[in-house]
Every structure is written in structure tokens, then in C-alpha cells.
Image (cartoon, rainbow, N blue to C red):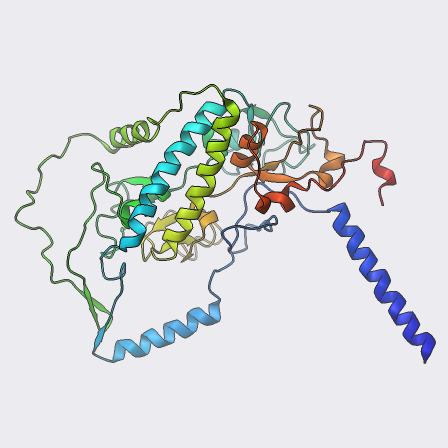
Length: 412
């Protein structure tokens, strides 16, 4: 009996040793864009296949339970007390946070537009030539890596990337949402697709939370709405007499408004030659924008499609039939709406991390499992001299020693 127990203990120790060695080697898979259900993650989220749906924030069993409770409440004719912002009123303690998020976004865009003149940004050419399949690979720093991960349709057989110069839009991808004049009104229909303006989703979230933009007016209620038998009853006048319809309306297209809005957001330009100081301020603005947006999303609902990157800020998604993701024919082009996360609102583009002590040599495919990764905007600031927070320590993998090419075969 004793030798059998000794043998079981030996097998257990051997299994623990194998897990520890695998962790030190840091074997992981590579990806560019991914989705996560948490706001700040200490490890790289798993890449999803085209047929997979994004992880839901709330479990499906919980959603079914809430749906059954709502169905029972509909059968009872009584008033359901709504709290801000569900009743149309603003959450007062979140109004300053909305202004802070807008200010942080302006500072972030200014920092990125300043630093791209000193740090090279590359993007794969396959994402421009092939409209049906996007590569989305981005690299920050010179020279670009030689990791063979371009496996989209139309890519070369060697799976090597065809690099061209990129810009701010590749480091900070723009996610737009339909601007709602009344956030608790009806959803945008398919016929109104070209009649409703689209603005950045972060800006739309701040507008609904209390930040006012003259070009994009929104309805501010002074009296709450009521919910009786799951029907919204609004006793406030929709068009008060003191507001004249058609006044101060400029006869310009939506492209003029978008251009003017982008000029206003980029007007906050830092007049400084200290690259490290700009990078430090940009890193703080990035963290401040994500943290503030996460606080706003705790009260103000944001919806995202389970299969595509479409985002709609508001209690429900729009009805525009423009989804081209997995099995969109079965949904007639409708989006599969679910609760969004901060990574859906501000998607991070993960790139390979370049260490300071590492010589300026291109990253090779044979050593890709030893390289760390960071969001592209964080990597841009890190190469400019900004310190990286501890929440990215596991992703950077600074504790993993990168071997030489002739030493790789001897790594245990």
C-alpha cells in the first residue's frame, strides 16, 4: 500500500513541475483584436473564432430569469418605479466624470498625434487590399516584426505581413454609435440609417451622461417618465413653446459636422518638445478615459453585437440591418445585441512589446512565444519613456528571458 501512495505523490509532483515549466516558457497564442468581459485584465484574452459569440457579462440563465420576472410584471397593471437614468433624468454625480472623460480623450488624441511623428507605426497592407477579410495587424516601432501571423484570405503563402505606414486610427480605432436625441425613445430604424448622425461611442456616452455639444443636441428632462405595465408614459411636453423648431439649424451635411467636431477635439495641442512628458500625460489620459467610461457604463447602458464590433449607446440597440458577421442571413442582417464592456467601447489593439534593453532588431517568428504584448497606445507611450502600470506586467512578460536563435533549441 505504501509504494502505491509514494507513486501517486511522485506523479502529482511531476505534474506540478510540468505546469510550472510551461508557465515559465510562456507559451501563448497570438492575436490582434479580441474581446473581454472585464474592464482591466492582467492577461491576454482569448481570441474568438468567427463563429463564436462574445462572452456575455451576465449569464444566460440570469437573463432568462430576469425575462421571466419582467413577463410576470407586465401582467400586473401597476407603476414600476424607475431610477435615473432609466426615468430620463441625469445621474448628477456622474456629470463631472463625463466632462473628465471628454477632456481625457482630447488629451489622448493630442498626445498620439504628437508622438506618431517620432515613433513609426506599421499596419498590414492586406487589411487595405482585401475588403472581404481584414488582417488588422499593427506594429509600433522600427523595424516591423517578421512574425508570420497573416492568415487571412488573400495573404501570401508564407503568412508574412506586408507593412505600410499607419496612423492614429490604427492605434486608437474609432468606434461610432448613432446619436440619440432621446435616449429612452424608440430605436433607430433601418430607414433612418442615413438620417441619424454617427459620433464616437465614447462621446455619445458622455453626451447621454450630461456633456452638452451644440452640434449634437439631446433632450434633457426636468420631470421623470413613468412605467406602467411595461409601457413608458411621458407627461412632459416634447416640444416646449420656448424652443422654436428650426432655429439655429445650419444647412450643412453630416460630413461638415463630423469634420468640425474632430477639429474641436484636436484643438487641445500640447506645445512641448519633451516627448517623455507628453507620453506620461498621454498614459494618464488613457487610464483616466477608460476608468471614467467604465464608471459611466455602470449606470448608462451600452449595447454591442455578439458577433461584430457594432456598438450602440443606450438602453437598447438599433434596428439597422447592417450586420455581416456569422449567420447574419438567419437574423436578416439584425445585430445580436448584448451588454457591452469597456473593451467594446474602447477596443485595444494588441501589439508585440519592444523592450528597452532589446537591440533594434526585427522580432522573428521562431521566438514569438517569448515576446510580450501590450495595447498599441500603451506601447506607443512606453517607447516614448512613459512608465507602464502594474496591471500590464503579466502581458509585458518582462520576467521571461528571450534566448538567442542558437539557444532556442536548448530551452527547457
